[in-house]
Amino acid sequence: MSRVGLLFGSFNPVHVGHLILAEHFATRTDLTEVWLVVTPHNPFKAAADLLPEAERLHLVQLAIAGNPRLRAEDIEFGLPRPSYTIATLDALRQRHPSHDFVLLMGADNLLGLPRWQESARLLAEVDIYVYPRPGAAVPDLAPFPRVEVLTAPLLDISATYIRESLRAGRSIRYLVPAAVEAELLK
Image (cartoon, helix red, strand yellow):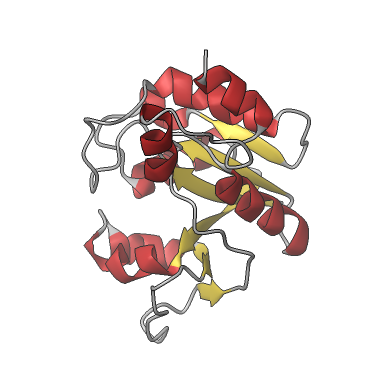
């Protein structure tokens, strides 16, 4: 059974910070692959500033082209909205029964995990690899027995910063892969 990491995100747009994390987990852990799961709408975020989902998926595909350990995943596009991680996990397990899925998340998300849909089931059924986030303390892990905190190189880059730079006509070179930059500047 192959272990596949799931990195969920709006990827609005995908940037080098996402890619560095995905590559790190795909090559420096027991994971065979990392799938970047493009979320149509995170229930904890406003939808107003989202690029269309098909465009965000396309940008992820451009960003990871040629990397056999990374995959763009659009399973949530066909699921009820808003998207809940547990429902996505159930759908992925049904579609890919030979995979053991591992959630990848920042320490900031771990703090909010008890508020997630069916969080007790999620915490009981899934291994979670947590990476540190600037300004987010890692909580006491006693309530999270399947959580492992791993180090990873982090860049303090946000999709919001990239969108604001684009609106202001500023360069986004090196913040996103060249193919993503070319697509965004069309």
